[in-house]
Length: 110
Length: 110
DNA sequence: GCGCTACATATGTATCAGACATATATCGGG
DNA sequence: CCCGATATATGTCTGATACATATGTAGCGC
Image (cartoon, rainbow over all chains, first blue to last red):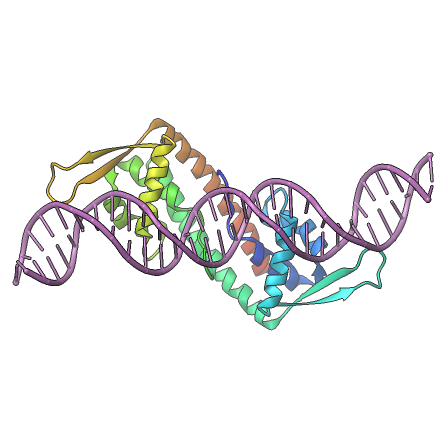
């Protein structure tokens, strides 16, 4: 609704995909929309988010330029990242619960 | 998690309460935490949000200074506000669905 | 070799909601 | 008379997202 409407989904989404397997940004950008239920994700913000996660030690990265095509920076989740993802999962469950409360109140008074 | 972690809950919460009955800001501030599952809401932002809703024609306000205590600005939802609330409800249901998808993926790969 | 598209990463900046701080005023009770 | 509860309001910072643009590799058709 209006602008800035999103839910804080980018970081947990990235960590979730990286926990399944290490991969690079472009690949994540292709997979995120399905996972997050959005049409597309902002490319620039994905790369920024990945650098942010790395700065906080939640992922590590490594360049791969031996493969064909442009060089890829492959990201891998760390133990600290896995723990952060667990906390995100808890936060998401709480968020879901809060949404349920609000939706229930909305439907009740209709 | 970290800062600015919320889901866009303030506007739909305010509209939901105002649809039940007209009331003033201070009263809304007392009721919102229960509805939104938060410890407390930011007082300043509630008043700003109410003015914003009024600017967009979703609520109207009227001063009541005949009652004891400080003057109260009582807000009332408009038809346009009711329609906006319906759209918010739809958005919330979609958000709920997106959270479910992500949580499912998280729990699956654990 | 040229233009086109897909692949891949990155920076710049505007906007906006929420967090945090503070100001102002009324009124009742001790 | 001061304090706390009631009541509304503004100022400002930050962080996340939105929107725009830049840069470079590489394969394909012609």
